[in-house]
Each structure stands twice: as C-alpha cells, then as structure tokens.
Amino acid sequence: MMRGFTRFFPMIALCATLLPVLARGDDMNQQLLDIQHQWARINYQIQAREKEEAFYKLEARSDALVQQFPKRAEPKVWEAIVLSTHAGVHGGLGALSMVRKARDLLLEAEKIDPTTLHGSIYTSLGSLYYQVPGWPLGFGSNEKAEVCLKKALALNPDGIDSNYFYGDYLYRQGHLQDALAALGKALHAPARPDRALADKGRRRDIQALIAKIQAKQQAKNEDSY
Image (tube, rainbow, N blue to C red):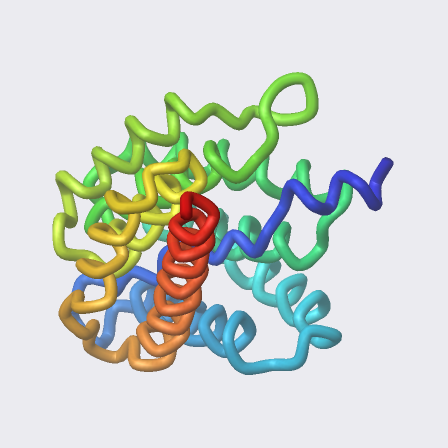
C-alpha cells in the first residue's frame, strides 16, 4: 500500500517567495533567507539520493525558528514549504503526516497574517489541496484548492509561483488553454531579488509543464483527424 500511495505525492515544490526586505540585522528574517536559499539548493541542485537527509535537517532548522518566533507567520509558512517539498521526495504513508502538519502550520499562519509573503499561505495551501488525495486517505479538495489559488493571485497577480501553481491546477482539471495562459504569465514574472536559483528552477518547472501541455494538445489534434 505504501508503494502505491507514493504516486499521490508528486514533488510539491511549493513557492519560494521573496521575504520582505527588512533591516539586515533582523535575526528572524536573516534566518528565513538562509532557509529559503537552502530549500532552493536542495530542491534544484543536490542529487536525489541526498535530498531526504538534507530535508530532514532543514525541517529541524525551520521548526526551531517557529519555536523561537511562535507569534510570527513567516516561519510557519516556510516550515510548511519545507515539509511539503520533503513529502514529495519521501512518498508513502509518511508523506501524509508531513503534508497534514504543513497544512496545519499554514492555517495557523493565516490566523496571524493572511497576507504575509505576498500570498504564499494561499499558494501553498492551494497546491496541497489539489495534490494531496481526498478522503479517506487525505484532505485534498479541488474546490478548496481553487479558492486558495485565486486568493493567492489576488494578493500576488504577477507572481511566478501564484501563476505557476494556478496553471498546474488548471492543467490537472483539463483546462489546457487556460493553463497555458497562466503558465505564460508565470514564465514572464519579474525576477525576485536574491532568489536567482529559485527563479531558475521554477522556470524549468514551468517550461516542462508547458511542453507537456503542448504535446498533449498536439496528440489530441492528431487523433481528431
């Protein structure tokens, strides 16, 4: 059962949103920036066999920051991002406990500041809701996913992640042309300062999905002749 369950957890490469540029001496934000950089390095650069251990270490750092700043939303969001991405690597039933914790952290962060990190709470929640299986195995819901992803777009209409995940959701729902429109907007999103590696990796994700959709459209057109 665990082996079959893995297929429900593609890489949930959640949004690497730029932190607000606050005072460089702000300890929390400096630690968050470092967690962001480590997430991008693990997700996009290191070998697959090394990702599991690296994500465990980053989870521990992220959780420590949540404990240090329990009334701030940003650390909770980033622990959720790390957990969710790790779930895609880990797979199996263990991944379900990771994404449940990620969802709970995001809901806690929403109560503190729903607009933090340019809508990352809703981008992350939305991507969880459409990628996690529904009842009885999980908490997935396409309806909740769409609500969250549209909230993310309202907060960050030109963002690379908000548009990418909405495009991915539309693709999975079979709305190929609308998905291409969202992905095209994501591909041309403004670069994020200090997030070059995350942007480069996300653009590769976008281009791969665009190519997949175009191939599917071409095959459908050929079948219609």
